Image (cartoon, rainbow, N blue to C red):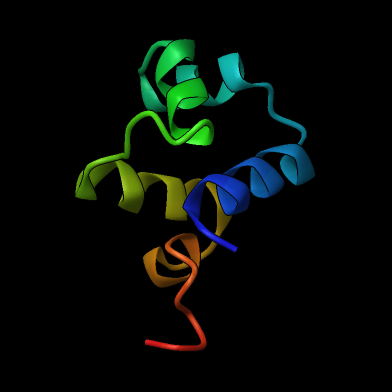
Length: 68
């Protein structure tokens, strides 16, 4: 899996809507939507924050936890 699928799966497992996750990150809902639809990507700070929110590593978010 790649980042967009991993993000969506983690978000749904955690029970967050895109809006709720955006609020936690202090971002617009459209930003989270764009990440999930591959229109844009988070920066390093945002990846680190996502990792803290979901309790996973940045490597896991990027889909390379087992390969990197």
